[in-house]
Amino acid sequence: MATENQPAPVETPDAAPAPAVAPVPAVLEVDEGVGSDTESEFSGESTASISSSIFQYRNENGRTYHAYKDGKYIMPNDEREQERLDLQHHLFLLTFENQLYLSPAGRDGRELRNVLDVGTGTGIWAVDFADEFPAAFVVGVDLSPIQSQFVPPNLSFQVDDIEEEWTWGLKFDFIYSRMMTASLANWPKFFERAYGGLAPGGWLELADICPLTSDNGTLTDNHAASKWVNHLMEGCKAIGRPFDGAVKYKEQLEAQGFINVHQVVFKWPQNRWPKDKKYKELGRCC
Image (cartoon, rainbow, N blue to C red; front, side, top):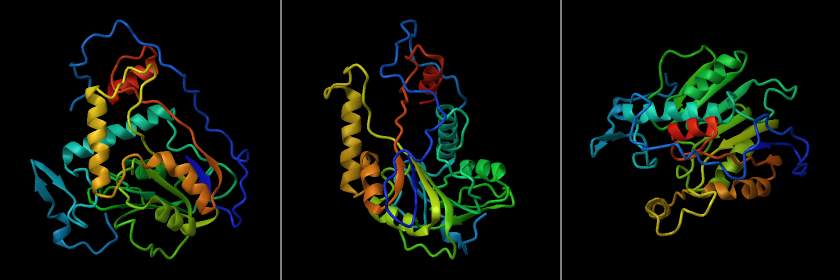
């Protein structure tokens, strides 16, 4: 989802170009020759003043979790999780046909000077973006200091909480947020801060997921996957960080005053069953 910040909240839905990606089929064709899915095709610097306590990660059930603002983010931060995040980056590159993002930011004649990557994780997106735009100053923010110290000179990683008041003394030309569902308690508040933190004409882009669906109605309420997702959504709701927040992003962005709000829906199969080569690879990664 790409949105543009302008001084006046005037809706001009046709002003931004459509993303240059292949259309998504209404129904994916099944590859009847697919057998078992059990085989594996994959092997398995901060500018903040960091005290040693930030690196004293909480250990629970054999996994480690961020120490700064402990408990705010539900996912681990250990090596196993970092590998998953890097694979997820590959998934997005496959989905977006090797593009890091889809909005017109940096392609609409406006120079990108300051860029913010929200929830940067391992920092892999921020590193690739900084390499692609060496003239831009890129800031990657996360609760965990798990990013590499070997980064492009125009990239800075910071340990910070995006839900606190923003204290950057600059305006961003582009703000990117990826897979942050169930991470924020108040998305409208985040959109308010992002709107105020963008330079006029700046862009905000969100890439996120919604709960499982099926093309052919085979995902019934009694299906184990449906039960798993329902438990996940109930748990996220109980901690005040909804897992299905993405369904309201467009409505909330427009209510905040963003214009040129475009929502594009992609499909991620959860295994290798699609016949189409691209979707089979996406499913294999998932």
